[in-house]
Image (cartoon, rainbow, N blue to C red; front, top):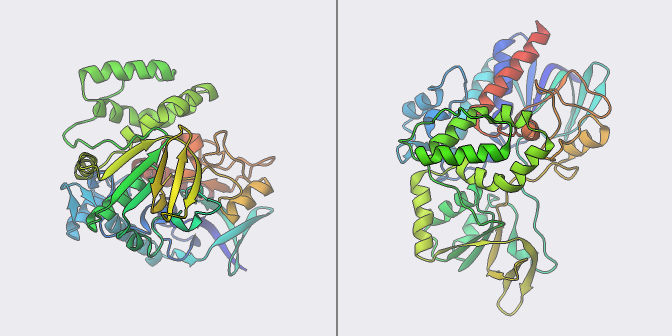
Length: 431
């Protein structure tokens, strides 16, 4: 069995950057990165199409906290295409991440392209079982990223439901459909719509979500305004936000609040967090996760042309109309939508034993436990996973797995700091 000082599981942004920093800080240590084949870049970037663009300007997308211009220099050096002179393609960001990974490999990082399915504690080390082998490591970091959405099923319409919009051949099969329904109105649904638009799709697209909210547009001319109000109460923060937005652009107010979101979330008790999640989260998501202006305008133009329909409501059932060969989506508000094809873009699922074999192993063994909201797993302030009943000092999580602990940690500006900080923590152990 091969032995390592540190293994990072997960080939997305968090896994690549954690292993990069660890190898840079402790070059003499044997460090490995386990990533499933063809999954470098994770869910966000590994399946990027030719037209998909980032939803953040390139000058805010540096992977290195100590070098804010790192990605911008990559864009300039490689003559990367930019939407609205600001938004790089996801495909180019994947190439950027792979270049960082290659730098790590040149420095001695070992890339293991396999699927980790189980871990087993061995006193002061961990045995990792993969599809093809077993590995032993002194320190273990889980960077599992976001998980695919919960699957939609039907008793007789499953052949018209696609739960992975980026699976090979799916988009090609949609181009000639007359009527497509996308479940979800967030960034993934817009990415799919933008891809179809660029392939000259001529049919009608319906987007369905509980509140029917779509992402807002970036305004690149607006600068963040520092948040100076208390952050102890959700209701009071909402009042202060509205008051501030009367005097300046709401984007400036929201962006000024962003640096405080992690600390604010952690100071709220369960009741305050619940108020936010129940009443404000959908509005926060569409305002916080914004679109390139051209993408936003495309949505508006398609709505005016009646090529795009936004429906709000909860799905109660999906059935099959054999006469018209269509799926019928029934909503709890008594309305329904007919579709030639249904695409699931409903967002990352909550964590459960069904998420993956490794997650099932973690939860059933007690090595980890879900956070209160089941967004991820419980961790302490430095990212150490809180087990049940025992917490191990050499088992960590990084990235979206910590969303229930930190809330704001699924985007590059936060993740680049989190990955560096965790690598520094682990390397202090070696020193």
